[in-house]
Amino acid sequence: MMHAPLEQIATADPPPLQPIVHLEGVTHTYGRLTRTVTALDRTDLKIFEGDFVALVGPSGCGKSTILKLITGLITASSGYVFVGGREVGAAPVRVGMAFQNPTMLPWLTLRDNVMLPLKIVPPFRQEYRRKRKGEFRDRVEALLAQVGLAGFSDKYPWQLSGGMLQRASLCRALIHEPQLLMLDEPFGALDQFTREELWSVMQDLWISRKPTVVLVTHDLKEAAYLANRICVMQARPGRIIDDNEVPFARPRTVAMTYEPTFVSLTQRLRELIVAASPPKEVTP
Amino acid sequence: MKTQLRRRAGSVALIVGFFLFWEFACVAFGIKDLVLPRPSQIIVTLIDRLPAIWPHAVQTLYTTMVGFGLGIFFGVLIGVTIGSSRLAYDTAYPLLVGFSSIPKVAVVPIFVLWFGAGTVPAVLTAMILCIFPIVVNVATGLATTEPELEDVMRALKASKLDILFNVGLPRAMPYFFASLKVAITQAFVGTVIAETVASNRGIGNLMMIASSSFDVPLVFAGLLILAALGVALYLIFSFIESRVTGWTRRQDEFAVG
Image 1 (cartoon, rainbow over the protein chains, first blue to last red):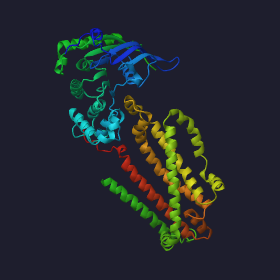
Image 2 (image 1 turned 30 degrees about the horizontal axis):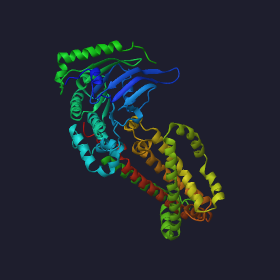
Image 3 (image 1 turned 45 degrees about the horizontal axis):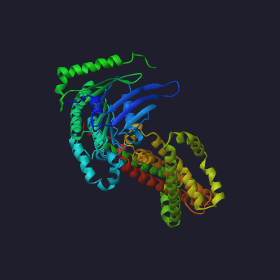
Image 4 (image 1 turned 30 degrees about the vertical axis):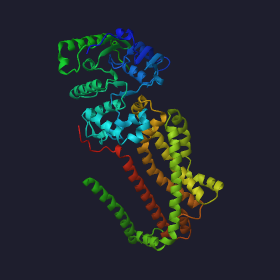
């Protein structure tokens, strides 16, 4: 599936597409007074509905900061973050998020963990009491089965392996049918084979549900396998220095990642990132 | 399972052995009843005079439970208030430590002054003795909640109240129950102190009167009752704890993966 260049989509005649996520001159600094670090510097970014965008770059380049800004976990120091056409706090957009650690609540079963967003997010929360044992429960079971966790819903998090928890974490991020799915290095802590398997699971989920996805990752192969569009960032100050479409057809397979065109793409990304990395310094 | 059984048997043997040693030591060294009665004597006294002791035991239990209940209510309330923000935690902690370091016996006369002798000062003393561990533990449990767990909720745009009920409080439960086991024994201490100082009912009062008439076996019978009540309540709360906070004991059930 080829994507038209963004400018064309944005300026196409009726209907003029509104980006679901729009960062406008966003700067974010951590720390106070003299000891500040500019994690993100005057960044513009538009993400359109149904897209799958990967953010890659050296550590400290503000990838995760962008995710947190879009999710509203932190507020930009300056500039504007629009989600669904409104400022981020007031956005009527459902957001799902999966973190690097599965962050399952240890006192809940897998089913209740995955069901958590339905308990919190409107409009589901109004119906939670009524449908908790019926429709919602079936929905959780179906989604767990889709990622290969059928029959584990009564287990507690500590009874499962890291890979299984990460699958469950994906389910929790998706159960409330978010229009926007934020993935913060969700496969980073897994072994190679589990990771490749979850790429395929993730791709299937995206193809069947078409949420807008923003993926932060260190793994260039992962970015090229999963995303439609890859933004390369530089560190200190954090900025987007390269923004490109990924031309490979879907569904993609792990075998494709060894083909020359794929390898040359990841190679190019690698060079960009190495060039963008700040000079090595010893931090106290 | 086997080691658990062995541990149980060990502690039962130790308890039985302790009383047997006591009994034989009293006989062997010819210790008088007036100094240290034998366990068998204490039990005989207890059974003989149960009709007289019973109302006092009920009074003590009642007073303790009311004080404990109030302690839980206000303790959780204060604990949640303090624990839900870093600022409140840092601000209130020194004051709490100050209050807790006052010897609680010293406040009984003040309560008597305010409310007169009887049940009320005993309830209040039980409450203030058991409230501190509850406040500290609930506040600590809330304050140490992993920010990652809160982020899960905040990403869903959950309200502060949602986060408190779905993450904060469940997360603080193990701390809360650990504090209850300490608090219930503290509540007993408070009740008995107050009864000893200013009351005409309760085990504390009974022991005061018995000791002033040199009825030493009755004093020890009172002690035995207190120990039994304390152990019983401790066991009840341990049981509830294990049911509610089983998730903290992740043991060897690492079945899959």
